[in-house]
Length: 219
Ligand SMILES: [Zn+2]
Ligand SMILES: [Zn+2]
Image 1: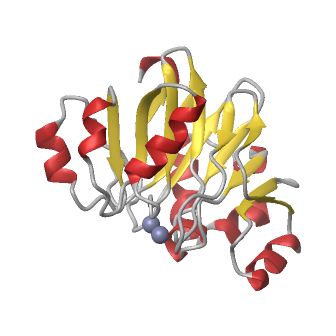
Image 2 (image 1 turned 90 degrees about the vertical axis):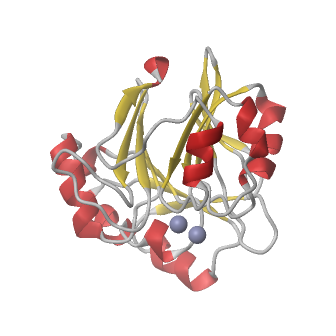
């Protein structure tokens, strides 16, 4: 399994930056795009630099319906061939209907399997509901978050039902970060407000940027 950051507030190596987040998971069976950033042109540019063909995307998972996570969806749906789109059940009906015009949607409320070794946590949180992804690895589970509006600690606690957490990657927003002390690998991206504190408190910190890629086993 491989992970590539395709859209982030920071970028390197010819990738373009923009406010938002998108990440591609490649398993031996499928390519799964998690969130789509805001600017579809930047997302497609970054895919090109990464050597990722948008036509080959099998599944798209949208963490929540904020602009910086769904903005590029339109561009991807114009390229990808009949992808399935996993959306939080609580997103606005009009948005669901628009997506339905271009793709099959799967409305997520509870945790469910997306493909071998890839699960969604289901909708978490109260005000702004959001789903995170869980990647199952030999070292433990890797959590992928969008903005982490439910709070990174709450997402970690809920994810522990599925086994030990090995890594957390994604936007952490303004979350409390004490629990991160116990996580071996931390890759804060996108909207993480307490990034300087995380850097100081944790030896597990890794820098995130559009253009970052890693085999899951080497993370
Ligand atoms: Zn958000
Ligand atoms: Zn965001």
